[in-house]
Length: 283
Image 1 (tube, rainbow, N blue to C red):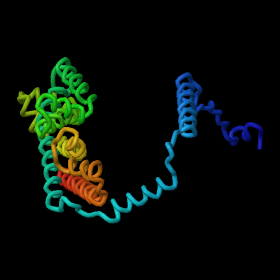
Image 2 (image 1 turned 180 degrees about the vertical axis):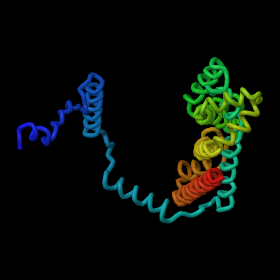
Image 3 (image 1 turned 180 degrees about the horizontal axis):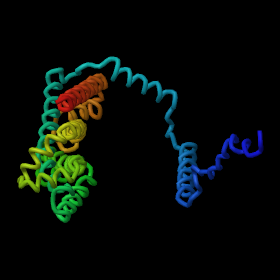
Image 4 (image 1 turned 30 degrees about the horizontal axis):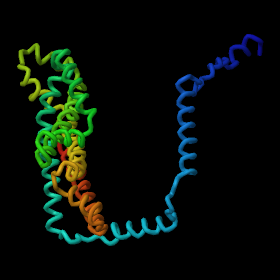
């Protein structure tokens, strides 16, 4: 075999690829490390110098275990009774459903106007900015704000929950609408289709599964918020009963029973949401 034949048979040399640094040192990374280290040191110092005010740790843990045992292993309806608690739970469920429906209707309308691929850019930007400001304020704060205007009660809770729901669903729905190919919308406009015909005949059927998912996510959030504002805004419902049982009468048996009711409703809402979404996806 000649030297030329050996060169032909010889495997080509694979060039070495440059080394890739997965974690480059940068000022931002150093600052994050410094901040986390400082927080760990401060937390450790605080815990070691914490004034326990004579609290016995062993006794405290025993009482905690006893309380948890009363709540979750020995739940009962307490002095309020099952009927009253079920009625209060129904009030919270209806409150969450009502505010979600209001948020879905107005949210879809504003989402259509805020979507970049449907309407004027300036109008959409204005709506998105307003909704971002509304979302930045927690729901409980909106409920308290409206309680100053309307007084403590169900009205303040409905307005507070609905206000935040509209802002939340406007963003969620508009992102679903903006996911539609713009060429599809433009082709419909060329054929002379009206604006709302395009919305309800082309866009609505395309994103219905996504709308259902976002709406039920908001329903779960509103149910949790309805429990929170039940005591804070005087809206009643299961939230108020939970506040009374845990913070006033210290009936931990009833507290555990209420917690189980809330968990049951949450699982039911999740189950319904999954089934409805599967129905629309299979169509």
